[in-house]
Image 1 (cartoon, chains in turn orange, cyan):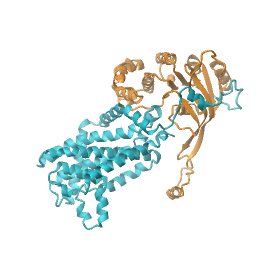
Image 2: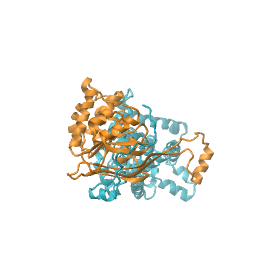
Image 3: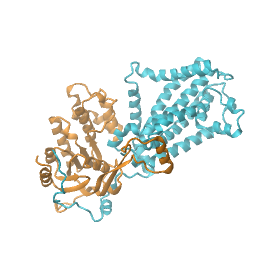
Image 4: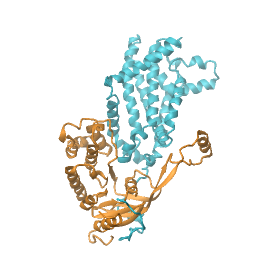
Length: 261
Length: 304
């Protein structure tokens, strides 16, 4: 992999060094802990038997470079989303380090914005939270709404977000996150939800973000959208990095492993 | 798609392990992700998001009564009803008003001002857990949330203060320049509340049981703040240190100052000793202490 793209000097944007992530899940034990037992545990400063540790990412290392679009594949529960959240700095690593250029942004489908507020309010709040200035977000607000296509079927942007369908909400979220120039953008299954027209628009936007010298990570179970957007693929399984290479090579091995396309 | 997790396939490219990732990162100016920024940098980031804090507080406030038929009228009705209930119980049924001139303004000031502290504490505890969705997607200094929560309560307090002004005037208390003293008193209280919301937000994010326990603690505190009665009636026969501790408690300090500012029959003699230094001290200690305490766990919020 280091032999690829020789010539121009490659600038790393994300360095992941022996990353381990451990979740501690409360209330996962037998579920019948009595109050007195809990009290004595607190007094003796023991950890509760109801706390279970889940080792979600085990020693992953890689380097991503500027202008790369990296796909992440693997079966459900293989640690893809967890790793993205660690790269974004939203989950502290148990061991190892993640170095990034600027502040990476993670864009996921399940990410709720504020459901009781209108779409427009969400656009403004999302922009401000990403660090845009007041005037900047007001200027871009209309573009974001147009890109999301929320208003194509009437004035939906002034309705609370809880009235949106899941596809509409995902489109709006993607549009908000994509409005900012990101050095590192991570997309977690976002393209799967939109309709065909929106998918085409967002793929174009991802290409544009890459052209503006960013790095894009894409998690997807749709091998076609990985082929369309990515030039490098990481295959995670059980929290370990099984393969790291050019898209075609890794996808072929993955498809063979999972038993056909 | 059944996945048979057999032995790993041949790894085409060995995972690239840089000989020295830290040096490579430093050479290209990359910074470690998910690491708590130093305090001055954190304050700078927070200041850069001030528009977010204000916009968040305003949107939440407008959404709060959006589903109620009477809408924003509840902003004014809630404090009024609160005061009405307490007047019924403590003024009419129990008759604790003895010896207090202008009992209704006295009571309403107490209820509204303490309610500011109480609701800041309660919503501060839930500031992190209620916004996990936001925290897990967007990167911003988490202190924005408890501060925004305090700001929401401050906006509600301002509505209450409007109502209070009307009540106080209707009860025949004159409007004087003395009322302006309420501004520094409430500002100091606001700093105190923000610090408390920050501290409780960290505790509430870690120990979820606090949200269950806190209402009881707050109610106990409320009865020690002399909202419905003059606390002196009870402390007159208590040991000196008990009276001193009760008079120095921040709940009472801010309340006494606001009463002193608004009601002409509450004189400087009835205030706790050293009341202004106490108000300032509590605000600084709680404000700075709460902020630092919250910042210490910045990278932990939203985990799990």
